[in-house]
Image (cartoon, rainbow, N blue to C red; front, top):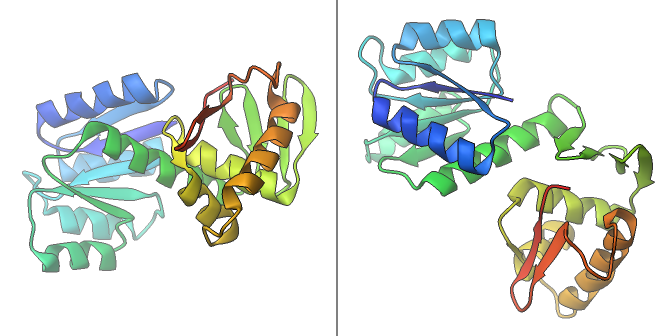
Length: 226
């Protein structure tokens, strides 16, 4: 997985590298301090996601965004100190995938990166998601794990997909229910418990002592890489 940071501030590049090292060590972080170099790297290195600063020394960041969109649909998170609404609107109109103001929170930025990358892998490229020792194919409702092919029921598939997108963060019962059924209805927590139990039977070495799907009692579930 490649992440390209187009940013002229060394401190911000270092911060992003450190966050990835802690929370997603498989990521290779590339960087460019100049807009023109960043455009070239998008074309040649084909990163999975771009973090783009709007205040670059050679080209306006919005122009960089516009030029990248002429040949690539790579997810782009815009970084800027600007707070005016028109800048935000213009960035989205030009094709930005997300928008984060400086100063930013490292783990929040990383969570946004994960969400965009994994969604793109599944929806646009149609490729299975590699998650630790899992190969998760959302479209086929299937996991390859330890040379076993594991078929998932529809609800199990939706639950696992949501947990992968948010990993390693805890997904609250309410958030998980809304993602799966579109509503946090009465009795949703009990239904989730049943589906989680069935998922654990399929993927946990010891379902009675789970170490992949973890539960924070009264809060929700989180997914650890197997």
